[in-house]
Length: 444
Ligand SMILES: Cc1cc2nc3c(=O)[nH]c(=O)nc-3n(C[C@H](O)[C@H](O)[C@H](O)COP(=O)(O)OP(=O)(O)OC[C@H]3O[C@@H](n4cnc5c(N)ncnc54)[C@H](O)[C@@H]3O)c2cc1C
Image 1 (cartoon, protein in one colour):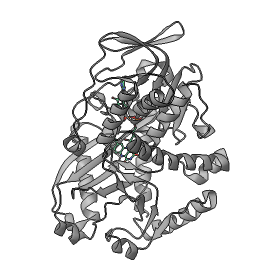
Image 2 (spheres, rainbow, N blue to C red):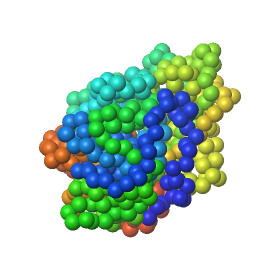
Image 3 (cartoon, helix red, strand yellow):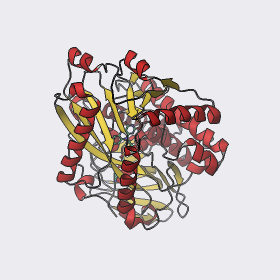
């Protein structure tokens, strides 16, 4: 069942800054015939395109990709462009308790390797995605939150040995990150910002160059078995394939196969961007660094100054995706932005857009076959960190589909997300969680 209105899933134009500033991308035509492939991928975002690229480049398999909209139309072409370690909402300590220390360490390693994989693809495939180096900074929204960040740093060192840098408010000011709203920060050195639409278009071009066949405007609307193989139907044709990779993120089409129902909770993430600011305007706030930054709220904001002097400010949440709810959320986001950066209170916001990110019931990303049909592989649930984790999961899915070993993949990720209990109540769970997070943030 779809949790949002049909317009959320219809491949209409996204009014994002990325669309306006991206390098021209290739247009991939719709599927117009009946074809066969060893592997078919549903979804043309980071996960599906990375799977296709790695299958073609590293495993000698030429897959077919079917994308409902233009390539990169989903979350991949419209996100904040934070290519940073992450993918879960569980936390390292709980992960270690639940799955064991070795598994938690393996996951942490995977999150670091995922960022390196994106950097490697940009380099090796010649993808121009405007990387902004500098890792990721978490800024504390309260003194209590700063104490928590310091504690988290110790935990990461104890559990993994990885070192993050603690910064006082004065350090932040000296580094061109001044805001009265923040009480210090913690910098994760691994990670960078990028232009997500340029990245996803670059991935598509590389996948095609390596031998994948890509089809845009080709929504899968029917799925049946044909002997041991799967036949996926679109409006214009069909693909008969031995293996299917489902890479549809928060846009998971639950109705097309019973094995997909109730497995993810799609939630909205929202972004505003300003007009380009002058050097004087930037100096007035004292925030001149292009550091990719998040605050420490449970309902976090993510933000960064872009190379052309625009400011990007994002936040998750909003239960409805009708025009009135979207307008209300935009207003709220603008208010939060101006509260954190008062010197920019008069700077116009030029763009607002939103899209779906996917959560799993167990709060970890997933990458593996359906129990009942092992020839169907599912990769999703990056909890808002899919630039790196989606790319990595795609590479792991490619190896699984090619029958190779995947030693880097923690055991707990090697399956699709478990179904939510009473999936019809997912919006209700989300509403309760959002209210709980808001209350938590008020307490500091
Ligand atoms: C506003 C926003 C900000 C974000 N910011 C960040 C960030 O800064 N850093 C970060 O790491 N992550 C961020 N994310 C999350 C990240 O974008 C996603 O985790 C990631 O893009 C998921 O990639 P994907 O390929 O799995 O899914 P998607 O990119 O969502 O692609 C899924 C595709 O499947 C297609 N599809 C669905 N059904 C069908 C069908 N039946 N047939 C064919 N195709 C179908 C859809 O059209 C869609 O294009 C953000 C997300 C949003 C929405």
